[in-house]
Length: 108
Image (cartoon, rainbow, N blue to C red; front, side):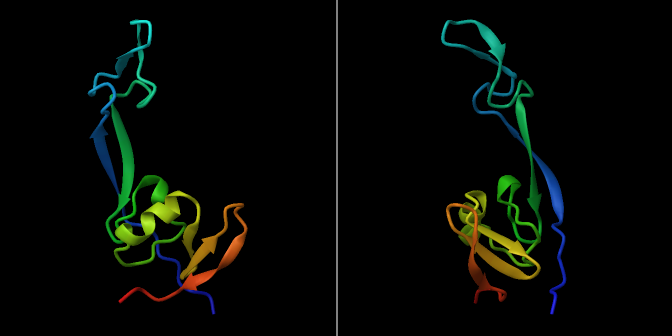
């Protein structure tokens, strides 16, 4: 049985770049001004956050799990070790091959 795919409810967030303090310009090792490499000269980061599960940016899964899971899952998703697809958590090994299904139920 195929599980219903849940789309993320994304909202856009902006955060001031801590490297250039929002100016978009930094000083290189020789004292010359250059476009900030951290924020690509924009002075801020734009990232997306799911209002349902709380996952953000590179920690977004393929499908939304449908419940808050940011605290316990975001690091593993960001590192490529975990994803949520078609109603199931899928765990990956370091090489990216499927390791096994973790669970299709939300934690208690």
